[in-house]
Image 1 (cartoon, rainbow, N blue to C red):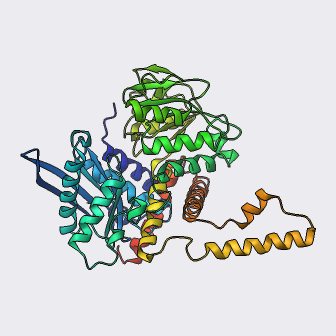
Image 2: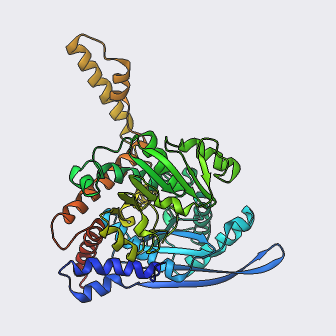
Length: 469
């Protein structure tokens, strides 16, 4: 096991990037420091008894406002984890050019132990604590879903804020990841997993980078092992399988691993898990209780998409994948990262790979502030222009345009089309910026260092523009 905790690993990774840069030490220290941390404890009556709950909200940076980051519900969450995640959010936003600072929240709770009504009471009380202390606002601090939370919790938080501040016409923008019916945006639920897909696809568009990993060719038929079939793992593996042609040969879950060298149908597996609450017994693959051991199986791509620190010094030397893609936050410790680097294994780091969620959260926030859905103004105009183009083609060629071509030319982009287009553009441009930095200096030897150098340079410029010295 690693001797470093999650926060210490993040700090070491940032320090590694700082050492590769010509950066004023005082600016580096300012960037690393956490701006503010709120700790709350509050009572809620549960089944006739008073229970106390503890929660945190860390604001790592306010160089851009609002500060942005999810709220996770987990029994093991603590202040160091929240602070580390807030720091990652600062770098993540900078990497994908989203104008937010970094924040993160956590509530120490096991959601499986409470009913829907109890979870609503707890969430609304937590939201009141955050709002009354200035840690929930569409202009200064905007939460989103994370592990253990989802659209439901965001709707409760938004409604609670609206009740506290009924005069705020932008109250709907106090959280992102809401249900579409309550101001959410289409494509947000799938966004992080979709971003993982776009990141891997962009990697395979650059043969030099693919060669660095000891691979060749495109993504089609590459073998993938994924850890975690939650929101991120499910969507990433589903899209990689159905749209990119990759082969998912193993899926690791809490109760074990299912594996099939011929490939696993992800949608079928997901439907089975929803019904049976386990991967054990899935008829199209072999089951083994030793789930974490499957991280060490032969494959082209390993995607840890669940918890932090699943690859540490205890197992890093046995990892056989050629490309590790961090869909989760902090799945590879700093010390394990050094081992993988020595083995020639390429790691695409979390601060870039799972930034799809915050990118689409940004789209949702902008949509909420503008009070209009994307595509409402221009969609029918685009369709009308498409019909004119079809008519012109038919007039010049004196032949009818095939129905499938007609439909594609005429169809105007809806909100989901625009969200996916914006997300793909965000992930592709960010990757190109990262790889350009990687190949620009002998001091930058891996993608992780390049990612943090890109982020720190942008944040440092903001600090200097603000007069921080």
